[in-house]
Length: 398
Ligand SMILES: NC(=O)c1ccc[n+]([C@@H]2O[C@H](COP(=O)([O-])OP(=O)(O)OC[C@H]3O[C@@H](n4cnc5c(N)ncnc54)[C@H](O)[C@@H]3O)[C@@H](O)[C@H]2O)c1
Image (cartoon, rainbow, N blue to C red; front, side):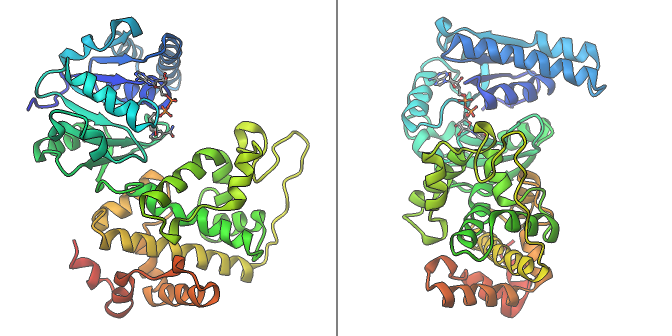
């Protein structure tokens, strides 16, 4: 296969939030970029957004004007009526179209009619199976996941996701390409939610359980997560920021993808918010009311209560990270990198578990399991080993 060098042309299909961000990253890494969309309006909007982003970089002194002009000149917009033919000169095409399996499968099948035999096909899917997308292709060995985070020019992490039939050469070439774009690369197995979205589930889910069983209110949980645990945002602030519709859909998709594992069960409270149109900041109301003049609710700044909240959420997060390692979803170091670089957790969860003591984490899960009688709180078999043998049990897996 072709080496994905700086002189390789990069194709991007889908010029929404993600496609535009990825285009900016590839342009600034020195590539010629072909950016297309089924909608001419979306494409024009993307061109304006790219122009404004480059301009902003120049104004902030992070980019010189000549480099920005050269990047701009390397962009070729592909108009809807040109169809896919221009992508024939690309060494890699990254799709960032809607999150819909049929759309992605038909796009890749159509791209295969025009692209070079050694062109790589990458998908930016965040919740679909890369293998299911690849199965629509004549050459599934050239298909791989490249999961960027939003906004792509700012977020350092890319989860590279080989499917069962992805070739080793394609994996190596894509990892090297992402690194040459300045990204922090982790390799995730093709499982629901990959690394970050899966391991982060309890941050939202356990916070929702705490509120549902009236152990604490929304503002107090957020206060505890921020002030006592050091997260940048509390879970409810973050759900409102992401959008409750988007956050709920990710949880539901992972729950379905894991055959309804109780650990990922979505929350009825969040579902009702979505149904009511309380999607978060974007609609002016979510868990919080963002209307002008509305005072945010005050947290109960009770340290004992706050520490109990943090202990419960952290125990679930650490158990999830440990189980991801046990299931070989990613290596120990990639799990740590993914959560610190992809969602800015203050510490890697495995290091955090070691600091708290894996025995304490296990005891908290067993307490919750006894109290609620739910499989949701079952400890990972690896957590039990860690509680007895310490970090040595992890090192054997590296
Ligand atoms: N937004 C995020 O936070 C985020 C983060 C990581 C990954 N993703 C994933 O990235 C992908 C894109 O997400 P987005 O938020 O940029 O979506 P978006 O809705 O902003 O953009 C999608 C674009 O694809 C275009 N499109 C749809 N079908 C097409 C087709 N067949 N051919 C060409 N263009 C087509 C649409 O016109 C639209 O402009 C999805 O798979 C999503 O799950 C999104």
